Amino acid sequence: MSPAKEAAAEQAPILTLDGISKSFDLGKGKTLEAITGVSFGVSRNEICVILGPSGCGKSTVLRMMAGLETPTSGDLMLEGRHIDGPGRDRGMVFQAYTSFDWMSVRRNVEFGMKINGVPASERRDRADHYIRLVGLTKFADAYPTQLSGGMRQRVAIARTLANGPELLLMDEPFGALDAETRWHMQELLVEIAESTRTTIVMVTHDIEEAIFLADKIVFMSRHPGRVKCEIVPEFKNGKRITEKEKVIDLDGYSEIERQIMRLMREEGAKD
Image (cartoon, rainbow, N blue to C red; front, side, top):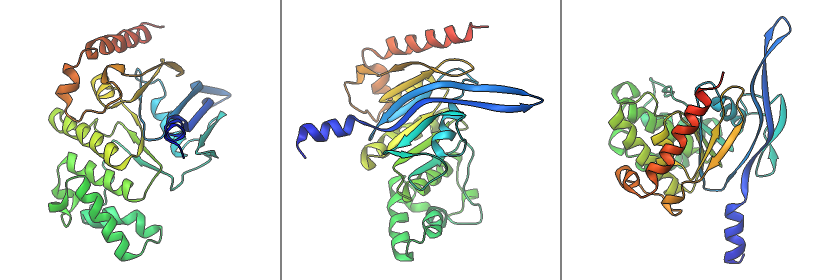
């Protein structure tokens, strides 16, 4: 394939949402419309961050990507395949810690591979690779209860990546962490995205986190959620920077932060 064709393939969406809507049955003939007409695409190797006011349906969109919720209408496709349930091609990291306390870090990371029938020697090699990637080699034989919150989230990320997903989905994964641990984890995620070339979709309510991490921000309106706009942080010049303070110091950072804050105020002011 020529360099031009490779570049075009890299930019083409591998994940597409086309007119996705979701309503929940409240009983007695009443329904709640959570999101309506959501459409956007995510390119290969992109970090796409979904941002918006509380209750706009960010997590609902992510859960539909994971196949944990079914759209009322519209279509989701990954690499040309309809998403109609959970699958090995997607991995999800939640805000809550999901490690098994009775298993060591290594056994936690191996767990999904074991279920999927990966041979023991290959499981161990892959587990050790991803444990090293998230900086937990010294803790491979420790148990989750012996780890900090940030380290437990590293275990969850390693376990998910070890299963080889095409798409990594993250639902406010650093929301429960203290400020210092959070920005260390954000920097780690950028390093992981660069080294693994994994496509990532992440939900957050944190404006600073979104700007630092995102190649593209999908901003959603308040309930019922719809895509209000897509924002590309052009001030990064297409580069990912692993040191957060360097991003904050760049010309253009403050402008995009003010833009997003105005969007948040606009949505918050609506009846």
